[in-house]
Amino acid sequence: MDIYHGWFNLKPGIRDMDFVEAFTAYMELLEREGVIEGWRLMRKKLGLAPAHLGEFHFMVEVADLTQLDSAFNWVATRADPVETEHFNVNSLVTGIQFALYRDFPDPVREQGEERF
Image 1 (cartoon, rainbow, N blue to C red):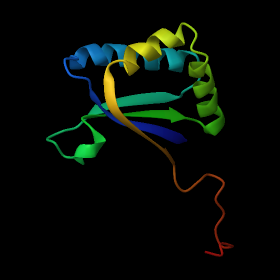
Image 2: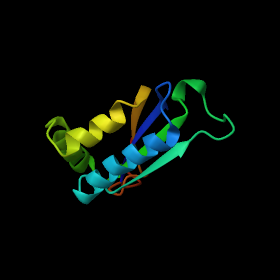
Image 3: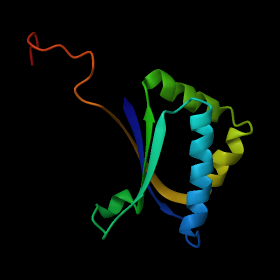
Image 4: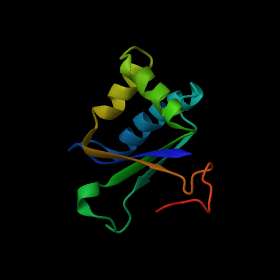
């Protein structure tokens, strides 16, 4: 499983639950279309995270990079219905940073012959 992360803040004046509604609609669309496996949205608790990572954090789970590429390609069409949902989220956030992690060890990992 590969996990696509994003950390961000809401733009000034954006209500948190308005963002949650837009983000949920976007993620549910991606999930229904089969281009993601699952997702989570989190908010910093007690200020316990580096300030540069922002108040909010999301995780999107994909089976592999092929599925992630499919999701990116669909969003990149900039065609509805995905364009509206993407805009509804993207227009509410600022300072977003992304990362891509994977489950470890990799399921194909063999042990005993490593040279480093």
